[in-house]
Image (cartoon, rainbow, N blue to C red; front, top):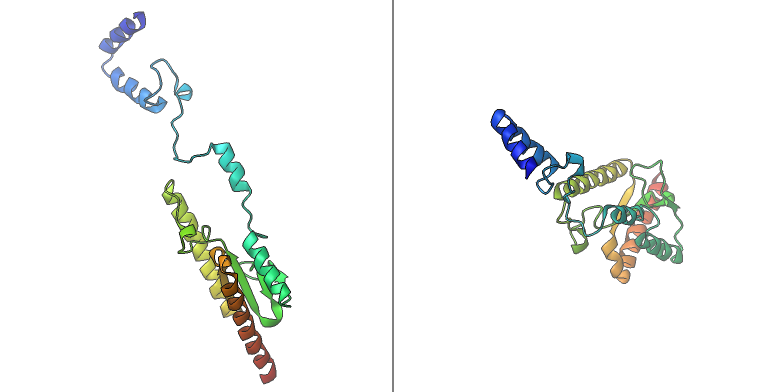
Length: 193
């Protein structure tokens, strides 16, 4: 009670002080107690994530950019069919996942979430929406520019989405059609020279 009396006397003598106290309370957090410094105020969560920051960081660090399950499945299917290919050629724009140099063909295996596919797996999280929109839009622009540049350089491009591995028969047919079409076109180009 003594502290309250002293504070009342100080406030009465300084007309600008109530505004300063209010500002300090706002900076320190509404939930903080009157005597706490801003750094001691309880932290209010800024995102609606269900995991603590350390656990979310650990989860995100385990997401890989290459040798993903869909990519390994597609590579296995192609190898069993007798196709031979190169992986992750850094000298090509976009670093395609699977490259068929003799056919001048590349395959990108994209995760639905990270590359903004229009399937249910491709929806944005409900928290931190602006961050995710910017990130996914940036990925989509980069993918589009890479495909465009590769086509300009004479490469045939196929994008396979992670959700397409659920129907392996259809995926196999799509891959074979793409590679046979590009193989035929490549053979015709060689004959015409």
